[in-house]
Amino acid sequence: SLPICITFPTEYVKTQLQLDEKANPPKYKGIVDCVKQTVKSHGVRGLYRGLSSLVYGSIPKAAVRFGMFEFLSNKMRDESGKLDSKRGFFCGLGAGVAEAVVVVCPMETIKVKFIHDQTSANPKYRGFFHGVREIIRSQGLKGTYQGLTATVLKQGSNQAIRFYVMTSLRNWYKGDDPNKAINPLITGLFGAIAGAASVFGNTPLDVIKTRMQGLEAHKYKSTVDCAVKILKHEGPLAFYKGTVPRLGRVCMDVAIVFIIYEEVVKLLNLVWKTD
Image (cartoon, rainbow, N blue to C red; front, side):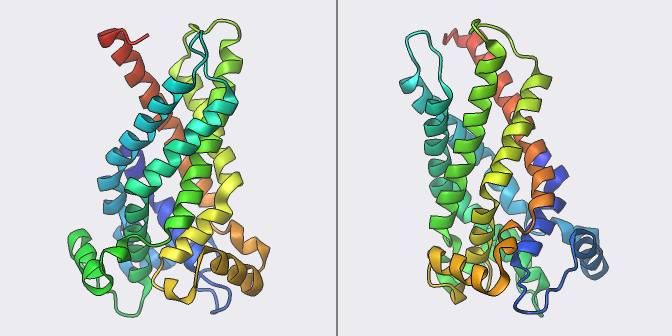
């Protein structure tokens, strides 16, 4: 959860920039302007709006993602126990879809609604539990499960790209020696590269997901309708809104998560000799 707490303001800014439509005159001129306006109206705490939903969701999300990845990769390894990058891609895809359905969709919907609520004329969510109660009271449980298609596409492609890049880099680094140890710093570097690849690969899906989960989501009939409307009214560049703040957060986040994951696996191998 620590990396989320450190990097959350970039997530906040990314979400605000993605919610900011060209059709209405845009509220924010860019990243700095968004930070300035938020701090001016809500203080520094305003940049942490929506953090609680990510913190509460971070541990179950990682558990589902890596649990599913381990489960699938153990079935797909070759005789020598090696996982090639193509199989890594499909294992990542499965892990991403699983985490999207079980954890990420409700977690992200709540986060986006909280962030969107803060900028509305009269914000109505007082805190995490009050906000969740309000969402469920006014929209039913389905109010916390908006943009599921977009989330499944985003998380699926996210983890597929990350695990593909990560598996490729690790196989390249290990060469012919599958038991070669990888320094945590190298793992972190590989994780950051994998994170960057996923940002460039799927930010358009992230923008669509954010819109489908905002307070204006009723404007869109479906994921495809949302994509068509963004393209028509705001042009293709709108699909890359929030790329810069997302890049910083994701690279750091993926690097840290992969380091922790590798170290935990090493520890478990010592305790249980799973090899």
